[in-house]
Image (cartoon, rainbow, N blue to C red; front, side, top):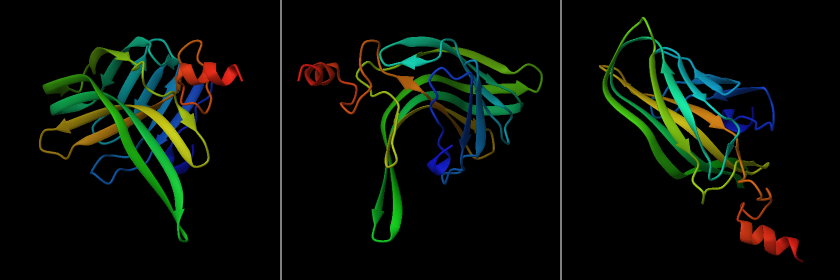
Length: 193
């Protein structure tokens, strides 16, 4: 847990519990649990799960993933995206403020007019490829870089629902995780001093 319902990144952990707060844009609050590569969200449109084949994710690498959406009803759209956000917490006078900026979004899956009958859940496979020029996950008391899998569901006749699952993204192999932003030329230059 952390500020604003964020999650923790545990290297080599077998179980991560991720909690997501409510969203001001009409999205639903929910929780996610990762057990052996599975992420879950629960709420008003059925359980949402995203299973990742080969955690942990690394910058520049890819893996397969599966969206599993239970429940019943019709969805106008179902989309899955890979999102990177930068978070900064600062003080303005006596108030603590948190600024969140989305710095990258990659659409991984989009389907229209999806019907669920309440029997078997919707299962869709997709690929997750971490951008080679992207930053790895990072968390400090006042700054954070976080990667998420975001599932957007637009049920017919209802407000859209957004489910977000925090990912732990490691640096590319051979790149030191440091304050250089994961750029290999800075890690190499810093090591020769």
